[in-house]
Length: 383
Image (tube, rainbow, N blue to C red; front, side, top):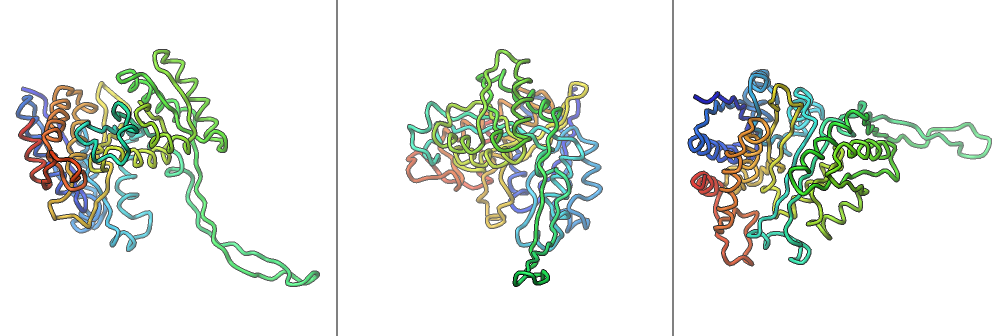
């Protein structure tokens, strides 16, 4: 009998419960096909946690994550409710960022692929799409601006004499906000090695993104990545300033293989790259910690948000959540065949013309618009 794989299922807010339901449906299909044994346990997080237990990350939810082999995460935060809490207590910081810190999830993988069948959904002209878009963004997840020294908002005074020789008086009070972007060489080395190892399994090219012409940590980033690259002579390395990278993603996206980014740059560029795949609803992500005992703990979530405007309307695209489950099978459990069966099922359903509203276009004569449940049903059947 196969080992029981314990998975914490945290659906969260907005469309989270809807897309999570379809991901669980597909996981059950993969479980049956491959003879696996999943123990899927659900707990609330985000505003669902606040409503159920008075906390955006209830103790029972955190305890479940600690007892699990991996976390399948939905999305948290509601724009109309978030401002009612202090910033540090809002779901994204007090739940998602806390989980990243709690489990030292330093490496974020965001694959961006444009299937040929979705070429109509890509905003780029066909000649810009090249021979196909297949990018892996490797983002450092626990350093940089988002985890720097305490953020400060303070008031300061501007004092000037009204006339030469007069005593200075306060003319105006201003506010100053401070964030610090901090990286150490070990943090850069470990994320660089993740990128180089990933590239060895792909097209063997890493493009490292920095701002070494302006920022001191950019200089350090480039130096350390270059040094780490010497450990992987079979992988080509080039460096690119972040502003140029943002432009080249639109001009020649097919030339990127693995993009290695610090935290904020990776956050921005991966969302920009998502547009190339037609929708954030197509993008999964994996947040990984260190590998110990042959197993990697990870948190797996779609790249998009809670989309409360379409929540409960059977409109959300569940593919990012479903593909996140596939990444979980691959990276936390080493179940490559099961992961590929889910990814192949998604590809077959897309090739067959099924589209949720975010990737539907009348320019595609083969497209047929379906809802969240119908898309999940089709992918589970294809598995």
